[in-house]
Length: 131
Image (cartoon, rainbow, N blue to C red; front, side, top):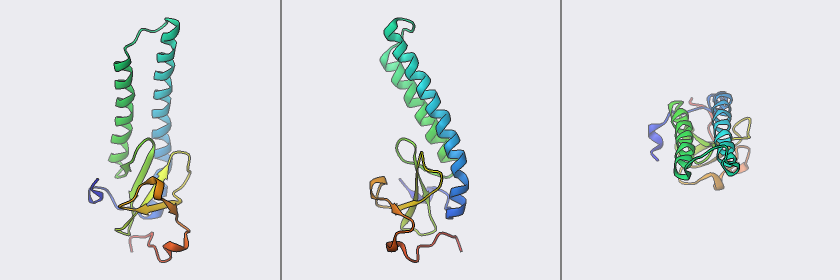
């Protein structure tokens, strides 16, 4: 993924978007839960559905979520995880649903599993502003 295609955020700017990301994610999760309930209701015969159509709907909701996140200038990364381009060209801010603020970062060449807390001593001098 080309990080240059995304907006650059200060930590403050990125954290200001977290409520909107939470709202978008909760809305998508609600849609997924409804679809799951419909699918499981099929077992009792109340809904007739095709497994392929079910998975297509789930994928459509997840793509819509990713598109909405991208329109905010944020990189969607997997299920309800986002990266923000930081002022440091070698690092990304990382957010995952369930977190109320950005507390983690990882290198642009790394992934979610490699993230470290922003207060890690390894990051001494890490820039969080665009100045």
